[in-house]
Amino acid sequence: MLNGLIDYLDSIKQRDPAARSRWEVLFYPGVWALGLHRAAHWLWGGKLYFLARMTNHFARFLTGIDIHPGARVGRHLFIDHGFTVIGETAQIGNGVTIYQCVTLGGTNPFEGVGGKRHPTLEDGVVIGSGAQVLGPITIGKGARIGANAVVTREVPEGATMVGPVARPIPVKAEQAGGFMPYGTPCEELTDPVQQKLCQMEREIKQLRSELASREAKPATKDDGKSRRA
Image 1 (cartoon, one colour):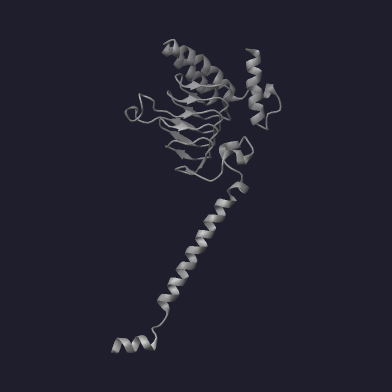
Image 2: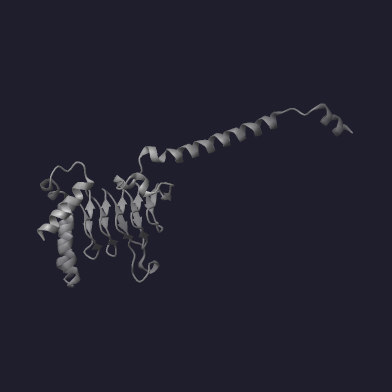
């Protein structure tokens, strides 16, 4: 158990440059929230729902993080800063990183599949701050969800999604050199996209200018004679 805890703390330290030691990481709210969730989930599995809920409410009061006792969480989940909500039927894989103010929310259970109404995050997913991942969808292995994105559809493995509603951009996870903090690509990676948008804008302006010049061009004398004839 001690080795498992040390391994977990080291995994967080690798993803957080602000962490200077394991002792510092040990007092992170996300670490406490996950530890208390393990206890609440065990109680929930034993159908001790009231005690599970009590543990859940205590964890939320202490950390500002609300993980439903029924949620299934894998190894090495890192919830940075807090104020995150994880729903009952959510499933989280190994090595997932979730930043502050994220919601793994549910939809109407009659719209889901067999009562599954919350997202599934596969291994290595990064969810940026303020993102909303909604419904019984799957976020593929190694995918990145940018800050404040709203995701309501399946996300393929290794994809990077940004914007509300989130859309894919041509930046794969491996292009970022491994772990991508906040699930948002650096400025130099988004430059090709910005350049393409600027190019399209220039072309539209040029077409508008040509159209305006043609409309303003006066009729020739030949055109006038042909009309009189």
